[in-house]
Amino acid sequence: MKVYRWAAAVVVIAALGLVAASGGEKPAAPARAIPDGPLGDAIRLGEMLVEQTTTHPLTKPYVGNALNCTSCHLDNGKDPNAATFIGVASAYPAWSPREGRVITLEDRVLNCFMRSCNGVRPPLGSRASVAVTAYITWLSADMPLRMNPSKPNGPNAVPPLEISTDEADPSRGEVIYAEKCASCHAKNGAGRKENPPVWGPRSYNQGAGLAQTPQLAAWLKVAMPLDEPDLADHDALDVAAFVNSHNRPAFKLDDHLPPSSKLGEYNSEAGSPKP
Image (cartoon, rainbow, N blue to C red; front, side, top):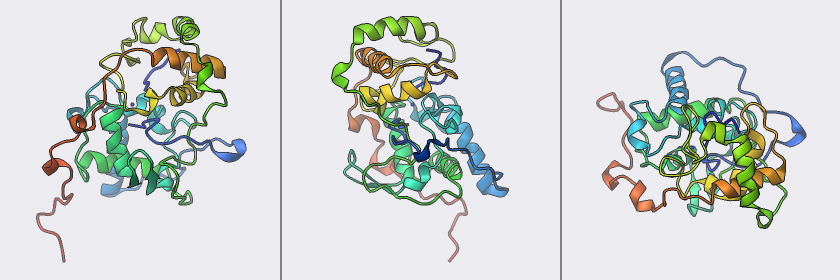
């Protein structure tokens, strides 16, 4: 399973949703150019942060593992199948059963830092969170607004598999993992070079969407092996069960929240706002 850039803000497949586009057509990134000026700069910065989440100085302090956003949202969220960002912004604000409240797209992005990136939630309104949200919103340009009243999922999200988790066989998954995945992610799941870890202390934590075997299986089905996904439903489910049978960081919300004084910031650099 060649998985270059696997598993991060979930987002979360968790990251940003799970229901496929209708009609079988693949969603495409907007044809129009990124706008000029500060907004365009923010969009381009957002794409850079999605790709370089673990190393960029704006996001590195908030990441606690070896996963970038593009580890799950392949091709910086432009892959039409693997947890695409295309169309995601049209679903927000959305009801989130996990949070028990209506959340914004920015909330969802920041929650991925806590869960898929096993880090700390960046401040609401920070340069990093605004840039990533601006980039994801640009990928939804000209798409109809369809705020999701059921769950924080975009219209092009990964479709769930039509197979029960009760049928999962992690022992069979171990065999498939050795055949298709270990060459990139190592026998011990620790990853190799640019291929991220899939379990252990440097992978996503137990609060991430991919820590749920049905969600991981659905993602594997459309994303792996990289550039040539060929797993049958049962294969994807078995590999997911095997991967998630291993240890990974626990998730305790309080450990991933900054002090209350750092939860948000006024995002003006003008010194004093204009009347």
